[in-house]
Length: 218
Image 1 (cartoon, rainbow, N blue to C red):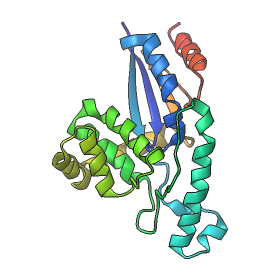
Image 2: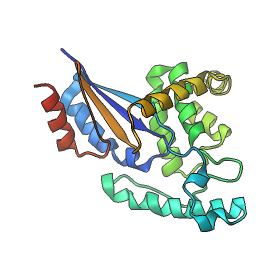
Image 3: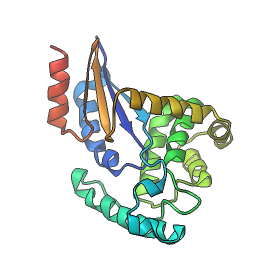
């Protein structure tokens, strides 16, 4: 039987993808082993300054980023109602002057894929929760290695893949794929069935996903 491939273009820090997890669980239950999930890391925050307000950028870096973290925390809390999963922003401090990008999280996911593909998705789930619920500073290498260990990955092997360029190269391929498809909004989902494919908003409802997939199968 032809597989249905659902590829999500996202970033581990995305609260929207976290809140979409219940929809994916329903899809997995509905379609069973006909449905295959893939994840492409699309790098939400190249540099935190890209998302800072002019008044935040005008301040000394640490102060401006602190204010941005506070504003980002409010955005995360606003997403809590989407899927009903808890979001905790107490002490949220994902970015600072030395950790200005979400790219390390994306590279970490690729390192997990390289080390143990079957543990990559559990690692992604744990990394999301570490960021959005536990408010750990997962832009830091030591936190990423801790999450890897908590997911059952060999921490030394993970660190090698994370630091020796292999995971970074894999992430660059993900970025190139994202750009080649013209994706500018995250999360976005590519649904493929045989030779048919369609891009949809990653925040589509369960019913919308089922209807789209059913149309592809006709």
